Image (tube, rainbow, N blue to C red; front, side, top):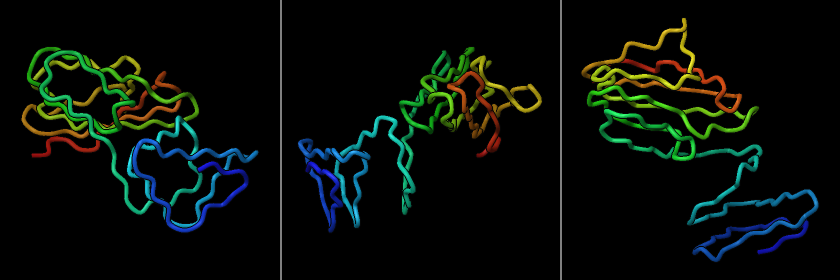
Amino acid sequence: ITTSGVTLHDNLIFNGTASTITCTDTDGILTFDTEVAFNHDITLADTEVIRPKLKDYAETVQAHGDKAATFNLDYEDGNVHTATITGGTPTIGIANPPATGIAGALTLILTDGAAGTITWDSDIVWPGGVAPALSADGTDVISFITVDAGSTIYGFIGGLSFS
């Protein structure tokens, strides 16, 4: 479907990888009056979505599995990450944050965080300047947010010792 100053009405369903929507209107706005179903990924390439009304949504979870060595929480892999620390001295880094002026949040669901000696990404700042004491036998929820392309990443606890 190619549009030029057109508002698309009624229910539209796009199936298969050959479905393409191109908007050639001078303001670059494609308007749908009613429900549109996309049965494949939609890549917006950092294009702003204005005033969405979300009825339901989900976030991609990146499962890192058992870790005793360095690993990264990569924004491009999803905004929720899980891992279990099995010992060692892992460094937990953060990769591919969004550009300056765009907020990027990550949540880490970490099991047995005190089973190893964690070194955190050097750009993470913690309340009071001290990284949290994690659970040796339980699950901790840790969140991170940045607004300056990862130069400063604010780390904070959502909860400790879930069992």
